[in-house]
Length: 109
Image (cartoon, rainbow, N blue to C red; front, side):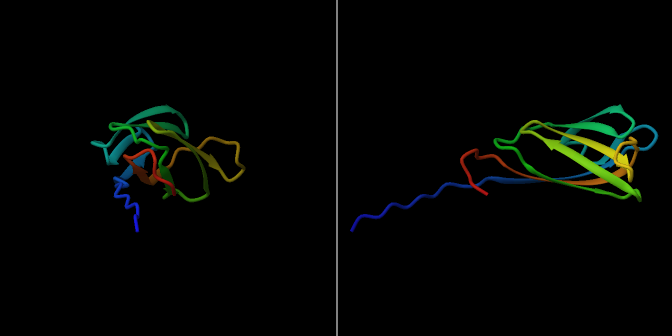
């Protein structure tokens, strides 16, 4: 009986970042994993120093009360926008960010 055995590796990678977006925006944790661009009030782009092979799963938690977060991840970057509870007024915030990605592009979730 012939059977096929596949031994691919998922090659997971997890990034933990802390973005202080109030005043002068800065990465307090994870600055070796990504670079930060402050696009204006409540709008930041994190560019990963090492791109992922697939779009990563990103979780962003605001440490600033009454904040709504919107994210747009890609293989190379994560755009984050923060709003007041009305959903339209841009708002600066302090954020904890977790990025879960893979360095093998053929893996399923």
